[in-house]
Length: 227
Ligand SMILES: Nc1ncnc2c1ncn2[C@@H]1O[C@H](COP(=O)(O)OP(=O)(O)OP(=O)(O)O)[C@@H](O)[C@H]1O
Ligand SMILES: [Mg+2]
Image (tube, rainbow, N blue to C red):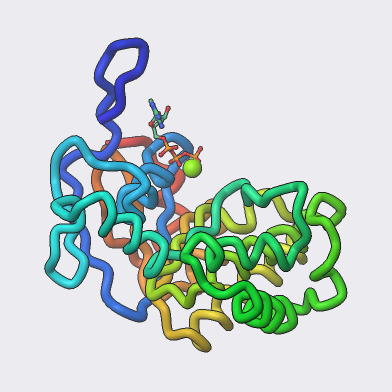
């Protein structure tokens, strides 16, 4: 529940769903239904007013702030709708950042960041300032940054939203490739139904709730009015 102009605004309500380890789940739904909120709560960036998130049976919001930020840093990789890279830094520095925050040795962090950038086809761009990279390249740097700590859970919020079709597909291919390589659990919020269908399972958000969707029903679900 958010406060909007002093009025309570209920976004997710009576929502229940399970995500299993190592699966890929896509999340679809109309603009404003709460997809980003859903990801933020799962990733513990926001606290729900009510309800629980169980991570292997443990209620994450009962943890101390310190444990929560450790969890966020160690276990979760976020790929945001807008990539939020640091514009004054190079690609490799952006990718290293989560390692430095976790007090890893800089030389080790740099090596890992470089290896990932190479894997994502960006070795030529590693030392360039990210503000001079194209949108697709920036999104790949953001992907590398999300993965550099080897998270068990990858949360991607419309990772192709700002990209043309070709760059979008490349980013999506990379997400699936990375998932295989790192055997992580992936949750992708997307308006792109082709991408949504590539996941193991699809969840639709509507009326505050989560609905398990058949892949053939995705388009109908997105077109229907809120229940
Ligand atoms: N910090 C906030 N304070 C108040 N209301 C908020 C806040 N964040 C989101 N909302 C409201 O909650 C609702 C859900 O927002 P959310 O960003 O989760 O939607 P979304 O499904 O991700 O939409 P989109 O597809 O456009 O990205 C919207 O009505 C939004 O205005
Ligand atoms: Mg959103």
